[in-house]
Every structure is written in structure tokens, then in C-alpha cells.
Length: 294
Image 1 (cartoon, rainbow, N blue to C red):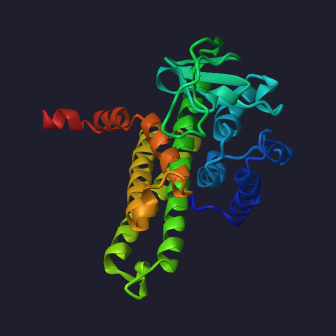
Image 2: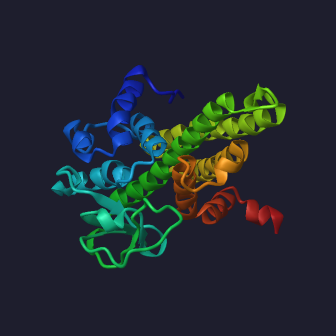
């Protein structure tokens, strides 16, 4: 099994970094990112990580990776016409629901879509533009369409969390190189090195699991457990990267106006949507761990 990214996949991810960083939806559409490019889940992981690294303030992953393939399979043009399609989370809480054209719901084996967002919702991330959505029309009950879309949503969440973790780590490494104390860069201190090394280790464990989950999704080999594992590891890695980043920045790390908080708060918001407890329960049940410990 080999699922390491190819040079072409890396080049594609690099090509979209600038419009993702700028939040340029029209530029992304002009690159046919929302068209059916025939990319596999593994090939798209680098793009999803890049979206997390940019903390784009648009429903990019939901539109391009989750709703787009589902709607294309149904012959519905809304996935490729430049519409913004947000994905409802637990209880209808929808990231970017306040700025989306359509909101997709994936629950109870049913895919539904609606145009109306409910009341705006306040979240820890002020750029998330969240809203609560409940009203939607049924798209399909077909498990062959709904299940892959739901798994893609989990995979996108995991990949974005890895990207966010990498961004927080990069910001922190750059900071500790230029911040001096006692006549030396703080990054030269052993305690700082250990914090950042631990954060990097978590991300380096999570990233291959995300690729493995993408491969499992493509080949339908225990995909649900693989995606659950990827989300749990990515959420934990991003959380620890955020903790290390704030601590290694010192006092400025607690300043909400500082750039770091854009990524820390996005990671916190996505982690809260990850439902890691339920995913761990599913993993335990699939491994019969609950019976072994009872």
C-alpha cells in the first residue's frame, strides 16, 4: 500500500494555496476546483490540508469535497456552479451557514439540502459565520451516496485540522527564532524545543492516518473506522499544537488580536464539531474493546 502524495498532487495543492489564503472564491472556481476533476480522496487531501492551513473563511471543503461529488452523482448542478454549500453539523450548527447559498445535512442515512439558514450562532471563532439550520428538502436516501458523503465530511475535518496544526506550528517556530531572552533565541531553550517537538510528533502521526483514511474510503476497506481514527488523531494533534503555540509565544500568545488566535480558535471550533467521544466509542465497539473491559 502506498498513499504518499505524488509530485502532481503536491503541485495541485501548492497551486491553490494563494487563492485559499486570499479567500478568493472566484479564483478557486476559475481553477475548476469545484468542477468534477475526477480526483480521488487521496489526491484531494493536500488541498484540504491547505484549506486548513489558510483557515479560509468560506465553506470550501464542504462545497468542493463533500457536497460537490454528492450533487454531481445526482446530476444536480449546484455543486459545480460556484454556489457556496455549507455542511450542517450536530444540532444543525453550520459553519459558514450565514454566508452559504445552500446548506447540506447528512444525518440518519438521509441527505437533505436547503437554501435558508436559521439564526446566526455565536462561536469561539468569529470568522466562522455560523448559523443554525434545520429546514431542508430530501436529496436522497441512497446509502451508496449518503455514506461516502458523510465519510468525506469526516475526512475533510481531519485534513483541515492537520493543516491548522501545521500553521500554528510554523508561526511558533518563526516566533521563537526571532524572540530573544537572556541574550539567546527562546527557540534554543530545551523546554521550548520539547513542546514544539511533541506538537510536531502529533501532527506527523495524524497526517498519515488522514491519508490512510482517504485510501480506505476509496477502496471501501473499513472506511468508517479509518475516518474516525483520523479525526480523533487530527483533533488531538491540532489541540496540542495550539496549546504549545500559545505557551511558547508567552504573553503575546494570549492576545486575541494576535494572528495565532485566528488558527487556534478555528481549531477549537472544528474540534468541537468532531464528536471525538462518539468516534472513540465506535472505534472501541468495532474492536470489541467495550466487551473486553466489561
